[in-house]
Image 1 (cartoon, one colour):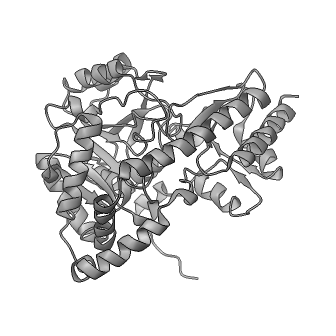
Image 2: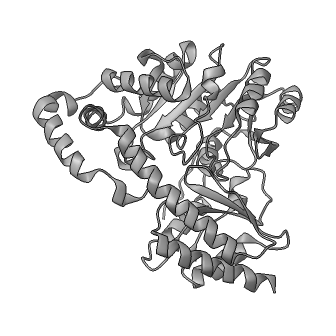
Length: 396
């Protein structure tokens, strides 16, 4: 067998915990709380049959052709209008670039800003997929204290003063992955007041913000941005269909321009057909109504999971009660390892993601993430009961 000489950066890439666990969950008997998967029964399949036929009939030669790197203009216009309406931003279509999933945005932003040894500040814990995207550029991570209200501004300021190589701050202010927490309005404003004092860029990742069960939608960090420091990411994966692989990036000036160079080098442009299909769906159907149906289902499933945890988990176990999104976060007693509990759970045909993977500098092995969007109610109740039994076995 040939012994290939791989690039040094490959040392930073390895199979993630989630990838390994998702292989286990291929077993249909497994009750999976592991992946961040939307409920497939909510995909608008019948509507998309009509949309696809219409696009091919009316726009076939354009929809199947190469396109511009920035993306289909009518779709970008709709996205800008939607973001302004929902998150109090002031975006134009020229601020929107279509990307092949938010994962591409994260990868290319890191390529744009991060040199070996540069510092990325992040919440603690943070999204594992972002760490995977960033790791190829060999950053150093500084986890900034995060409480129930969001990133602590005093801790952020201290880190920015201390870390002279800090290049970017990565945050998910709305229904964060993995904790399900949402930043308060006051914390967003205080965060941006700190950011405005430093020459640093913010990657604001917002895949879940529209999936709000109750309360008022808070403004995005981008709405507070007066200097073009915040790059806002959005996606259709959680509010429509992840298989379309269509997301977007919101930025201005030099960041937008340089991102277009990187995107063109990476894949020329995102799938033209998918862009036409989503744009046509938004013309023919009410996307807000579709998102409302998703919210109704996820709200019910989240409530069922929380009630089941109240009934089945020991008093020494705590968990978040999200107001939207896909996840809840569980903290076990400090002497328990979530990885050990997972092994017992897999024997019982239940899976989740151990929380240690979401901390870039390690530790916190007594935590775990649960997803409630992808399992029907009866399997959620059954799975939480089995999880509770496994935890109790390890507490004996």
